[in-house]
Image (cartoon, rainbow, N blue to C red; front, top):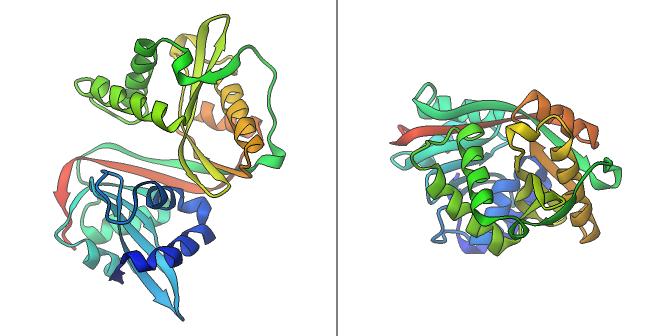
Length: 279
């Protein structure tokens, strides 16, 4: 594998688009932040090529997150690319993440989150929008402090975040969501019920993230309605496909109810502290 340069961007984009269900994060980050950009999510990329086309893409965010899109499975080559670099975690298809972490000598390191989740996709022509209370609104239609508190709870419950830092992270995320117009809130009679959002977009595909319903409001179908309404909005704007991964059995049931089907498994591994890859 070799380090990608700006001239490789069209070929990289074509490669990742060809496996978009498993490559939404690197493709979206490339489009949003640019190759070798300054944002924490800005990608550094290495590529493998065959017959003049890019076949595999290894991404390392500036903040240290590995995003593998490596169907060729040359883990030794990928590890050599990452040797000596700071790593904060690895997110991607389970088979790739587990193999790469093992090759890097990072399997078994302390983590704040290390979870395999079912990975789902939906052709939006088959979306089912359930009846129920509430209408969808932009995130800033609800009280700002309440939305930041919800996001902090999500950071702790879903992502294994620290209570000491969750509100700081939540404030940063809330501000970013408003700028990107990426998240929505389901509201009935002035009462917020559930949030949903897109954590990646590329071409005509969206990836769902940030779905959260406070514990007292759970079990009433609010999350599935919020997600479905947001997807219907995206479909009306040209989206044709949606991707997500589910953190619980309740989430799986909700997503299946609106039409999602499992396409594989997805892993989120966030290290407790940054470490240098052994390579």
